[in-house]
Structures are given as C-alpha cells and as structure tokens.
Picture (spheres, rainbow, N blue to C red):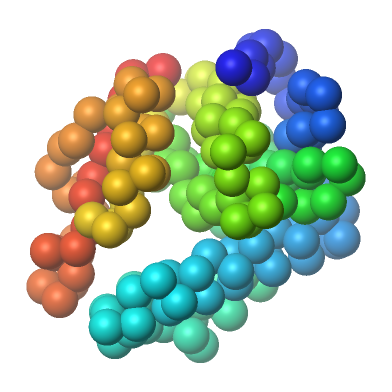
Length: 184
C-alpha cells in the first residue's frame, strides 16, 4: 500500500516507479486535462447505450470550459490537483476543492488502462485525503456513477460511506449517481 505522510503542500510522493505530485505547471495541468478527457471517452466506450446521460453530466461544451478552469476551481490552499506518473508518464489524476466549510469534495479520479492494477487509484485518493486533512478539512465527499463498481469498492475500502445527495441533482441523473462521504 502507498502510504502518504501528512505533510502540508508536499509536492511529490514517490514509491518505486509511481510518483504522485501536485500539478502546478502548464504541462502538468495539460496532462490532467488530457486524463479527464480520457475518462469521458472511457465512459463513452464502456457505456455507449448511456451516451445521452453521459453528455448530460459531462456536457461537451461545459466540460471543456470546466477543464480550462481546473486550476482556479482547485486552487491551493483550499484545493489541490494531483497527477500520477508511472515510469515518468502521466497515468492518473484526482483533485479536490472546498464543497462547504470544513468539507472537501474529491473530483475526477481517473487512472489510464495501462496503469490499472498498480495501486495508482489508491495512491491518488490517499494523497488527496491527506492533503485535505492537512488543509484543515474535517470530511470529504464525492459522487460516482452506479456503473463504476470498482471505484465504489475503492471508496468503501478507504472508509467512505454512502450518503444522500449533497447537491441538487437533475432528475435524469438521480438514478445513476451515488454519493459518498468520510471523516478525515
């Protein structure tokens, strides 16, 4: 297991060939944006029958605008963007921001197919949780899709528990989203 020390604003965590770092440079942010696009494409590829619902949640135009704003939405010290590298190549990302006072929201966890099974998702989650705790948050929330069973299992293993929706959900999405929270 990848163990992250609680160090405020630590820039790099490393275990063997896996590196997790705060994404700050334009190149790192570009890599994170590409990983986010890869996640949306993964959803399209794996759930073609649900493309209209995917487009509702990840509206293509709004999604691109969101990707441009990632550095502002997840800016330090209330947020963080992490990029994972395996053998130097960007293979995963996660980020968090303030969802409410004392509550962080984890967003956009994704690991490329080539890196799955190497503990990257766990390491990214642990980095985000550790940084949020160091930043003074008391709990963390997230949402995921009902089809992302591997992600649901990961979140449960990390101590997240299902809860009710913590934001207004469009009726078309109510049946496909799950919400989780854990104390930090």
